[in-house]
Length: 102
Image 1: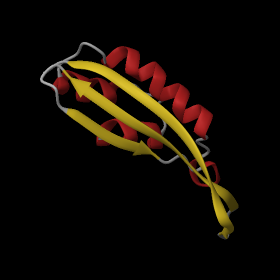
Image 2 (image 1 turned 120 degrees about the horizontal axis):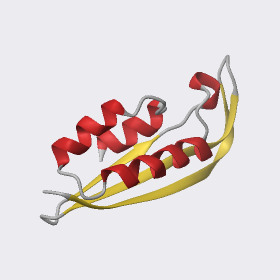
Image 3 (image 1 turned 90 degrees about the vertical axis):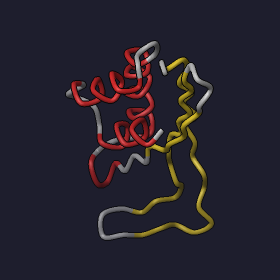
Image 4 (image 1 turned 135 degrees about the horizontal axis):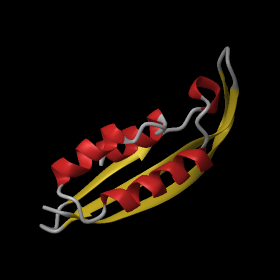
């Protein structure tokens, strides 16, 4: 069960009305959708929800980190890939969650 491909699809969906919290106002919902395929034909999906006003992680930053990590995961066994995620020290929380979920 080796990882054969990882597709990253960043998206910004405009909100009908701004979403206000004590920390920020969001005018769109940002996320990176992830699709991971393996050699047995299984496909997993996930989403990385960066929130700059909470942890400083941006859509562009999460996408870049996930792209870097994807190159390290392709060809690895699924268990090796999960172990590799824990070794990648400067990985943001949203980026990590998206790949773990998929």
